[in-house]
Amino acid sequence: MEQENLSQKRHSLAHLLGAAVLELYPKSNLTLGPAIDDGFYYDIDVAGKITEEDLPKIESKMKELLSGWKNFTGKEISYEEAKELYKENPYKLELIEEHKDKGLSIYSAGSPAVSKAEWFSDLCRGGHIENPSAEIKEGSWKLDRVAGAYWRGDENNKMLTRIYGLAFETKEDLDVYIKNLEEAEKRDHRKLGAQLKIFTVSPLVGSGLPLLQPNGMIIRKEIEDYLWSLHKDKGYDRVWTPHIAKIALYETSGHAEKFGDELFRVQGKEESFIMKPMNCPHHMQIFSDNHWSYRDMPVRYFEPATVYRDEKTGQLGGLTRVRAITQDDGHLFCRSIQIGQEIKTIVSIIKDFYTTMGMIDGYWVRLSLRGDDKSKYLGTDEVWEIAEKALTDVCIEENLPYKPAKDEAAFYGPKLDFMFKDAIGREWQLATIQCDFNLPERFNLSFINEKGEKERPVVIHRAISGSLERFMGVMIEHFAGIFPTWLSPVQVAIVPVKEDHLEFSKEIENKLRCISARTKIISSKENLGTRIHEAKKMNTPYVIVIGDKEKDSGELTIEKRDGEKIKITVEEFINNISEEIKNRI
Image (cartoon, rainbow, N blue to C red; front, side, top):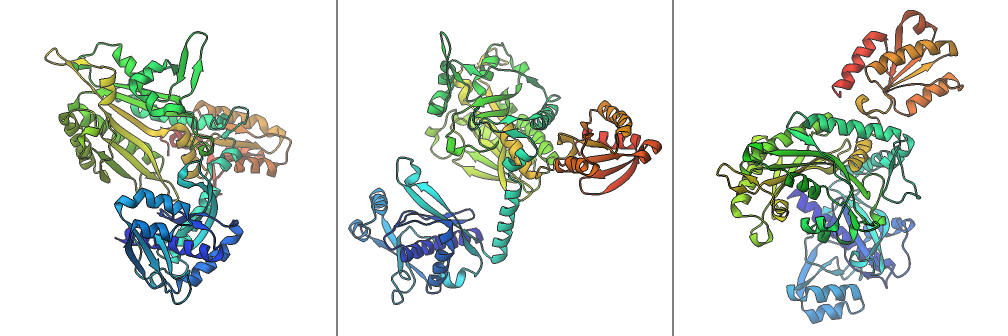
């Protein structure tokens, strides 16, 4: 109820924004102005031009009008009335035509005795607060930014001016949100990725095709190795599949139709190929090439493999939206009665992985189920009932914080989507588990059951991190570039004070490398302070300065990233950091 009331406040503020713009830019045409997760916006065909420098003026007008907005009143109007009312606004006329059979209504706010703008009417289906001037608290909202937006999101239509506003229940809530926005900007993985030499984007390579630098490859390989370590003792086998295949593969799987013009096409000397948009069809071919009995089930494949999709250039950004997507893909072929146990195992892997990443607190799971119109879904009622019960039972038995979502299942099966929060509270959909009755049918997969008959397997798709690129982007921002020791590209920086301290520094380096600790000696001709700063600016977990005292005593003074300094023997430090890396502390 509280969230619904906040949404109504945001919707009411969108109306207020529209009224203020019409008062300041009288010949403008309003289009659509919804409430959104952090506030509201209005798309407007402005008579003139609005930039972010104009926002204080518009906000001031909104505050002036708000004092007179004591209530919202709504009424239904006829198609003819609506057309007359908005005869000079082509956008509203388009909406009127679209919704004329569903009924039309307008909502008005304010007092007509004060000014036309304070008696503001808008074509709307409702959902407002009763008394905006009393219920919208001072300081709980503000205009945020100006952007461009095509009418109805179609690039063939006119570009409109979109004005965004932020709105919360209280000024304190707004202040916290703005502080988090500022923190998010500092954590932007694109800035940190460049600063920490994790990845780069080259215009010669192309948009959405980031290049991992050595530091980035270390992080990626550590994540990939950790994922495999969580699977290798649970019956998974690694497989490898090529990056291209004939289009017939994707026509059989249905991906050719699904991805359409997002497919990259490759012309060979004699044959045409498609860059794979998904790994699933390839894995179906590996399963199909073997003869399986019920005793072999489940069969589990694991492959971190790159797929390719021609996303629109304007939607690409850093690592979180790319054209080359490396999925930590896994496909399990099992009997319907085995679904529950397999999903429990996957859930345990997800919990272990996100506990290590420090994201387990506050997560929740969307359980996507079939809707009432069963004609939209593939598979028999019996298999759907088994699969949905298995997923529901796992949610209950594993004490998952789940929310059922009816009619949210994919046409090919029910699924679990795991939503995790990062260090500043932003929510990310990362891990997923999906049951699939479609691909086994399309590829005519089978195994021999106890009766000697062919039986159709169920395929379970699962991804723990989602895509490695996007997950790395999330991790850079989650850790603000200050990675735990096991993920840090350089784990120990050794800074010799003078040239004659270099030999002892190399002795320590060799001992650390024996336990696979990533170590770097910084021994340039720069002064000592500059070299220590070089180590610290890369967020190195441990910095060791080697001088006469350390060389003579064998005892090290180690500075941690948080500024704490400790004195410790070489052997103790090696034992400690070895445990820290091994256990991914």
